[in-house]
Image (cartoon, rainbow, N blue to C red; front, side):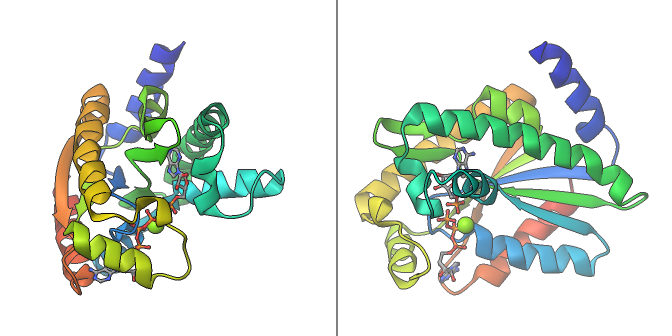
Amino acid sequence: MRRTHYLRSCSVSRVGRGLKVVVVVGVAGVGKSTVLSHAREVLEGSGYVVETLNYGDFMLRYVVERGICRSRDEIRGLPLSEQRRIQSLVARELRSYIDSLPAKYPGSDVVVFVDTHAVIKTATGFWPGLPEYVVKELMPDTIVVVEADPQSVVGRQSRDSSRFRGDYSDVGLVREVMEFIRMFSVASATLVGASVSVVRNEEGKAEEAGRFLAELIKRL
Ligand code: ATP
Ligand code: AMP
Ligand code: MG
């Protein structure tokens, strides 16, 4: 059953030039969402249709609608079994949405960014954001790892009052998570034949990182 679905996804989202799925990962606060907004601008300027799907938004909608919790940074504190269940539901929801895009934008070059995490720090240890049952729904063409100097990441976290990332705000921990992210990304990419690249988001240079990412995507 899984295998059949995998093949179906393959023929829909991988074959053909019209739709590219780009999964973007990185430690909390490194600047994924910021870099993506810049990359989107560049790609739209070059005639692409860009859809950015934030995995956390979908997880958040699910938990808020059911009164499970109220903020996105509380989700990773839920019991692991609950996070896994929601993660799996969201993967299928994203797949259906991605499948609807060719009909929504006929004849266009569509780039779907999935803004998510390769590793989530939970009370039970580092947990994969892209296990087989997720990555085989998303079927990314490429996985982009956004990185920055760990000290800068902690600085960004502390300046961003819209979020609570206290469980990640230690330079040593950020460095450790970044190492795990590379490993988990390679493991996920290997399951679906996606490429993996690292995009540096240097301090004050998110636009530059966005431009770099956009150029990379044009070559997919
Ligand atoms: P999360 O995984 O928690 O969603 P994220 O990786 O999406 O985090 P952002 O929300 O994009 O991170 O960025 C975190 C903070 O860092 C924001 O306040 C943003 O403005 C800032 N920021 C992003 N990129 C840079 C940069 N290159 N230099 C300085 N600040 C940055
Ligand atoms: P974000 O705003 O990207 O940090 O996402 C908010 C929260 O959603 C994260 O802290 C995780 O708890 C959850 N989340 C995002 N992506 C995934 C994923 N691929 N698997 C499991 N949980 C995820
Ligand atoms: Mg984000």
